[in-house]
Image (tube, rainbow, N blue to C red; front, side, top):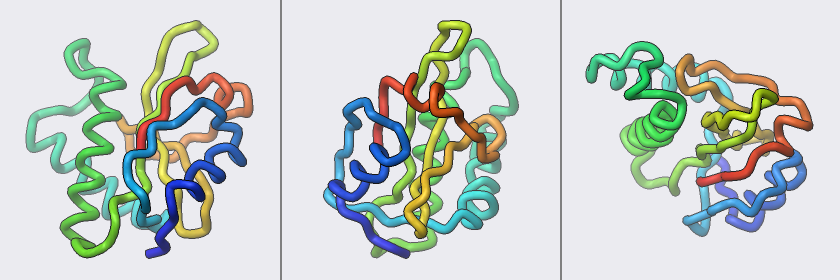
Length: 141
């Protein structure tokens, strides 16, 4: 896995129109492959949520809860499969929607230094417009 410094993470976020000041807590991060995010990681996160009988949006478990769970379980999956490597370059974001409501989802910075956004309720990669990226007001990794 490719390892990136917190400064490089910041540069990549800015290059991708994510201009709010992010919370970057570690000095370095391990970048997974896109394939790992879509397969091993997605399957593990889903299995853990199902183990806790979380299947689908609920008023008591909505997008921010899913985003926190995705961040947590992706890190657990990474630790199980690569325990001696740095923390995982997967984080949480919040943005304002066109309807002026907040939405929470996740992102990953993968080995080729691309940013992918992930809908944590499905584990699928989502595309964001420049306006949607500029509407991001909170980033945590």
